Image 1 (tube, rainbow, N blue to C red):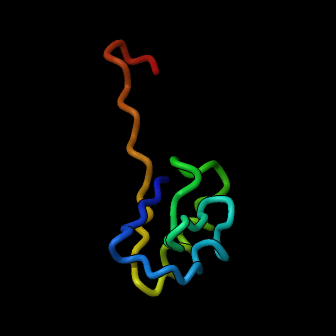
Image 2 (cartoon, one colour):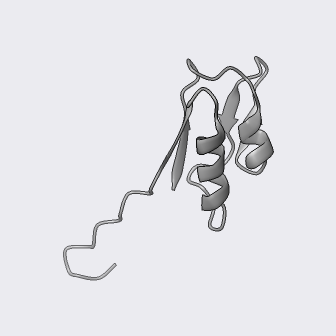
Length: 75
């Protein structure tokens, strides 16, 4: 999973930091920034909670793109 913060929408409520402190922090202006990209295993639920809890809808949580198989069929 990947999380993206739209800094033009973020108002610094910091709910993302409360929901997922291992994934988000606030920059010097008080806006959210992502600490771990892609989201580490086991933190998907926290990432979705942060995205869903953002009052400005400034956070998007997306599945990690699938890794294509190698041409020989081996990964």
